[in-house]
Image 1 (tube, rainbow, N blue to C red):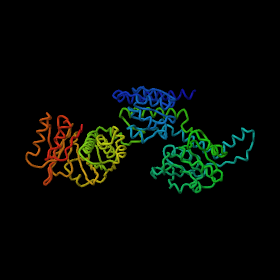
Image 2 (cartoon, rainbow, N blue to C red):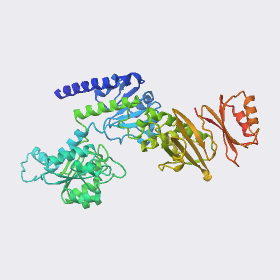
Image 3 (cartoon, helix red, strand yellow):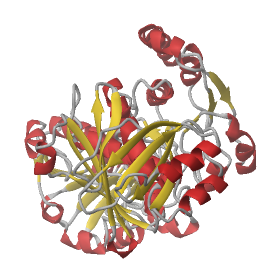
Length: 571
């Protein structure tokens, strides 16, 4: 009880500081509704309310119950019990973000969330200490055979000589996955006097050396380690990482600890390793299926296996930490302030940079123009960027967010797409529609030699090998189309509202019939721009003050002097 009081006081102190720091944003951000599930710590609800959101706590919902109410919410907080599936997302018409209070997102269908335009975030830092402590605790318990000795004592025996253990000092421990938790385990292992080797393809070697971790290739680790502790996510690459093949390469008497995710260890292979004596002991907090099925009882009941029921984050401190972190992160995301912890899109912070706004608006317009002024199936979309005023549009993140925005505009008018595109789901929708996407990172000389300080170029490849190119540039804060295809004489223009485009013979009176038809329909031409090239049809682009009726567009298409007549909405 005393520890809960201390934690509550600490949480309130943090809350007061956090609310004060963010008050200006909270007052300007629209209030949202957040559904809090899975017995989340009360500090989570307190933060949401202090930041101006309505937070509803509903624990133990069935899937039908969740589906019946999720459409009312902007955000949803879960732990490990609730599963966010495609079925749930079908009913989540207003959902913007799912927050996982913890690390693992196995219970969230991330691709379906991305497709639905929903951000998924986790809180990897909140339970770092808790999980690392459990890993080291299990390591010690396995090394000293605590579980067996405890069971022996409780059965009335006194067997001092039977449970001979091994010391940690002077031994080698392999840390597979050197993120926050892996690094903390490595630090404490060094405190025991252990040599730490590790594998993590994402960790720079110099950073690892600073932390006392000697990085090695995975295949080289197995034969060097007396202890192996796993701290990786479960992915196709890490599934069954511990298998018959890898166990065969390990030292005799190896001890294996898993506090990461079930499925990283092939449990049948581990049991065979234990029975053969190759593996001296194992300590497990996670399992391929939770709770473990009847078929896993042989492993769990094995005398040299220490088992706990997924307790990695089960400390009072960890539950407060992850509840607090997820609430702060979600409030910031809903307010458009920050996007810490978002796992399915990595460019949202860049998207909210004020200086990126005109480039994003221009990218979306280019995408809309492409999809509304071409015929035939689009096979590939390539985005090129150059320059940038006040903010570079050549960085990797800037190019990714611009590509997503181009695809958002493109998918909005593509036949076959029934989902409203967003910055989050547009790349996924394009892929579903069979469109290959690419970012050309080369700085083409044509861009360097252009008269513009910034250029966004989008190349589209169509069925049959046809190609279409549209380029734009931001002048001040306004986006302008500066090039379509290869017209050498092309006037830059700022597209607005409804745009009529067509190709016509480059001669006097060629567009008089167009103007007559529009005039008869009481449609005013606000501006007209003409791209010209010797020996080619002219490209005419007219900004219209009203949207022509379909019959008017058909009249225009019937004019023998015109070709490629399109009506585009670029608003």
